[in-house]
Image (cartoon, rainbow, N blue to C red; front, side, top):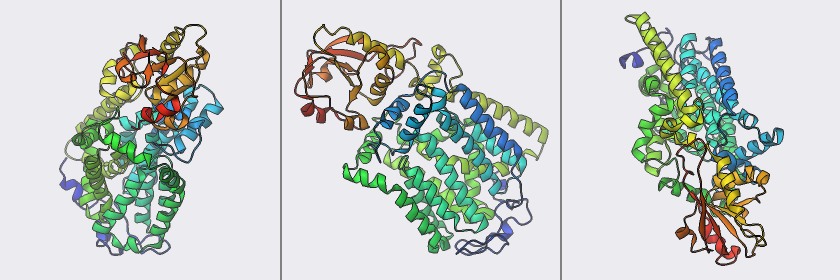
Length: 536
């Protein structure tokens, strides 16, 4: 697709002609908000174009597919962690806010042990993300078919499908960024600055989930100051929205400050590559193509170019610069690839109208047929990589592409192995302490262990470290994920009781780890605990 199609005047006769200069009020007619200048049209026909009904169908279809597939495989390690955290309510945890653990606890209270109910909020969040992508395309001037193209591109994206399949902080983070982007675009199209109050509210709620929306907020302020429209910086609504955001976030800030800012230590650990999903900095941008679907990457790439160059979108140019700025920030700070994914929906929406116009040029029947094949192939790839479509025993190739899939397989097998080792404790020694190397192992024991007679697990990993140590008594220990040599400084008399495996034969992070049986701690648990705690 020629890039001049992106930067040319929009097909609507009121397109670029109504875009005012950067930092100045536009001249076109439009609704007026409190404290704002009159806004002109953005894109082509955004104000009067109805939302295509197909967008609603696609959004509902995504949610339905996610609900239908929710119970396949098993819990993700993070879901097991959220379930445990939900029973230790706090304004913050070492590595996250309170929102997702509270959702996990609520869903588990409604239907204990039901994966489908636990993951229902994620399915709804994914459906809303798809719907908002269609709405974003509408705000940016897309008509019916282009809106449907935007929604469909989002619907088949791996990032939407996988985060919609599992309950995770990324699930709601993606929705928060998309909703905030839609409100920002709508505020600029209508000229109603009061929408910035809602932007602050959405970001504030999102910050109680994880701190990433703070990067979006800061990025928007910086790029507005550089690229305009600078009159926004004089808007009381924008700064009132910022106050609302910080007020909603303040419980998290107070908790973190009172506990020595453990979130920063977690971030440093991730940047050092100590997370299972850490990646080299240079992979962040190329990985966006996988998250959104490689074959459909031209849609969001064209959207980025359009935001940066199209005269009709001059008042939204800061959104394109925000994407580039945050890409540099996340690469420089060792962030994960999916941190940028929250801005993909607005880029997809911006690219939908030019791609739709491209379909009608040249040999339109050929172009439309090729596009249909590309969408179909992307849907198949997205379903295979993002959802548990294949039997677990055949999931090896998928795990090689998406390691998180492997994290949903084998937890009951792990806990059964722990129970077998615990039964090796000689009679009369008492109930062993279960010590896990990471929060996934500890969460799995808490979820599946009671049915096998196991006590609650302890771990020094992230928030689990705040819920320990075990009582100061000598006695046997079953340690998961430690090698005898690494356990020797704090556990005595250790030997391997078994190795973790899973019935599906999937080579995930837990397979092959030893389960030790030990005589007891070297020192009382209260003294050993600081050396066992770790963040990452």
